[in-house]
Length: 463
Image: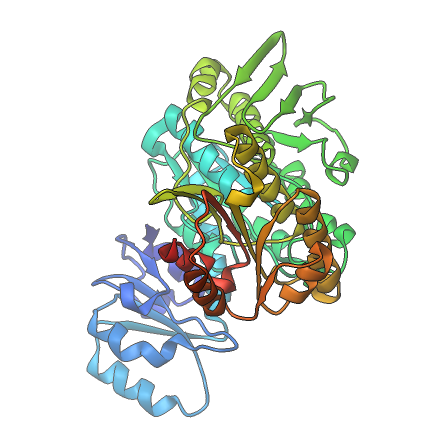
């Protein structure tokens, strides 16, 4: 909830709208979700302008509407103001800029140097790590925890997350994503994180960053923000990552990895061994599978122990029972007699390899022959000039795993097939669905992974 005085101070409109108002408001950017008394921010992007839905917003009786001026809008605005005297219309050059400034001001008012903002980012696994942190820290502080919902991790989502902070919250987990240089620094300038970690440096969004070195430069902004915070806390440094291990180990930094002095860890497909201080513990969670997932568990557990050392035993116990939410990210589903490994939210070369390894490990463990498995791989987006190479390499990796039955879908299906040395190639998902139905093959297990645009989760209906 946001105080009216905070909005007025940010906008500089105290003289025109109830400057003595002390009530709290909720901020909305989705015109369909506006309710009586909310503040609506009409954001404008390259392909949309929320002001086009202003009539529906007005009918919901918001307290205020923040919008951007535009040519030919004056007469419509005059009519709106005349017919809706109880709504405060605020014209600005950038609704997004006001939203972000408001979020930072609200975050500062909420914390006043006494509460934690946990920031996390990384090329892969940040949402999984966020959900693990939510479960661990939620075990300790309950509803005093606030956390990024869904994928609200960008220049709009982070401000909206912060604007939901209330007085009873003691810690906020803020996930930060990026696909262009400078975004993490901007998000840190809004969220002002006091603790956190970077999961890893990979090839996600390399189309925009051109090289892993530039991705590292972008992600390290979180480390730099926490290290320069006036409210220093903890940063867990993943030394198993070839880029992150280059970060300076200074006061407030604790190391994590196979050879680390602070949190020494060994991650396997079905367990985590962690040593810290004089303790050594083995964590097994039947709800989790994959080295990459256990590494995220280890990072989250390490930071949670640093933040709540008196609750170490509770955190270790909770780590063995965490269940991740269903969100099309590396989850197992049973459809009839078929086991599906669905990882269709996003894909890049690093996450593709990790998911394939996890699936293969699980199937080998169960004794499922390669002839009884079907692998379905779709496009990995935002890889730029390296797209063909990365898809070929993933095809080669799949070949080396010994895969037999393979579907490749999308614009880069042929590149997958070149690396694999064969396979069934389809331009569109629907073609693969039709082929499967006509083939009438039965598989005990199916692997599905691609970038979000292919929506591979819809294929689960055919098995």
